[in-house]
Length: 136
Image 1 (cartoon, rainbow, N blue to C red):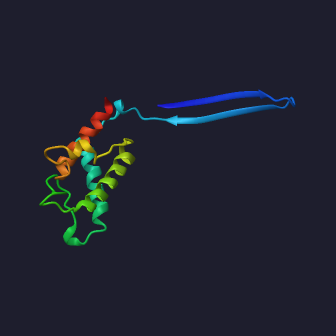
Image 2: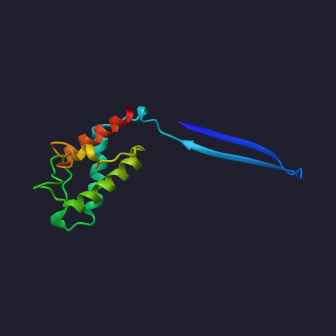
Image 3: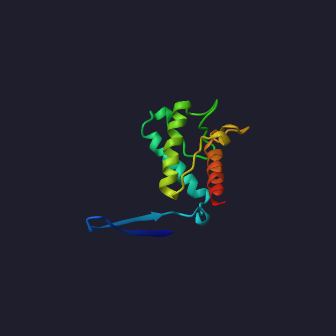
């Protein structure tokens, strides 16, 4: 939705000079209620972020682009710092692709019994849940 706001103000000074102030700005917002994102859309963004991370990794540390790929934990490819880097890139990719600003590593995610960062599939489910929450 696009909105336009314009404000004109005129002030009379003692010297009889007239000052006109005109302020204009364009506000652009994307109502989340209209956001429709499929699981495949989210997977595409996650896989693109994996591609970006893989560009900096040696061959033996590259991530597979599969839903069952472990990201974190005992079988995961990321250490804590690697996971943080991945999440930051992923949040930016989500914002760029869907126009939605979400925070993936928050108290909600960290307090879960099963980490949403365990696998690509669990992360995809969590992202969909977060995007759905923006609609409400």
